Image 1 (cartoon, rainbow over the protein chains, first blue to last red):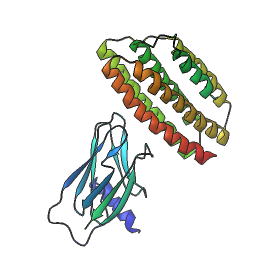
Image 2 (image 1 turned 45 degrees about the horizontal axis):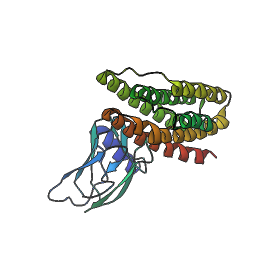
Image 3 (image 1 turned 90 degrees about the vertical axis):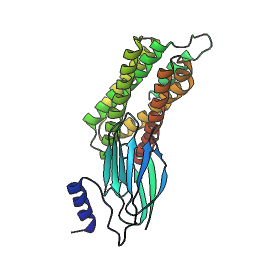
Image 4 (image 1 turned 60 degrees about the vertical axis):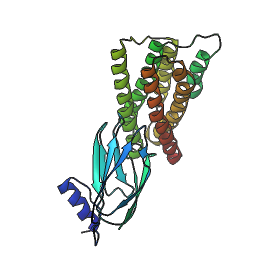
Length: 111
Length: 168
């Protein structure tokens, strides 16, 4: 079984997408908000840390998603709704809106 | 292609001797333009076998319905009755003709024509929103909704361009 399949399985069970587990977690995890307004992620580029929770808040009246560029994780963000993921591994994440592929964002996850 | 024809509709209304559209007319034109693209999307969903074209058509159907729902809620709130007008009528006539052409196509030929038409249609409607409808709107809430719609439709235009390029 591929490791990515296990992460996807965890997402299905937990309802929250997770990224691969890190060796260590920061002392204090933060909740960081990314707003979606007028078809754009703001901030478009985000610096976060392992353990942080990233919450997308959709202020548009159309549905969006936050979907990993590799399509291994995806959060549906209904109109005026919200969704989140917890970051569990350092690295660079490119994501986009599956419904509006020209909407993109990046998260750099520091240890 | 609908581009030239639809452009003529909006250009004619932009002539100096043509009075600018009223808010009830603008609401009708904007709603009609959205409804046309919903019908185009429904046709595409019936005909296409291409996953990317299907995803795009679903996006058009979902987003234009959402915008039109907002427009209906706003005119109700403002107690405004959208007013049919020559621009709306010409848009519908030209779109019906274009859709009749699309209906005769199948497979990759349909996909390509649909995507190219979506690029042309969104360019035309976005231009009209930017240059005629938004500047002419008097009510601030209507103006704001049109501005938000324009941002959504510009995203559609960009997506349609990517899709059309992939299908070439």
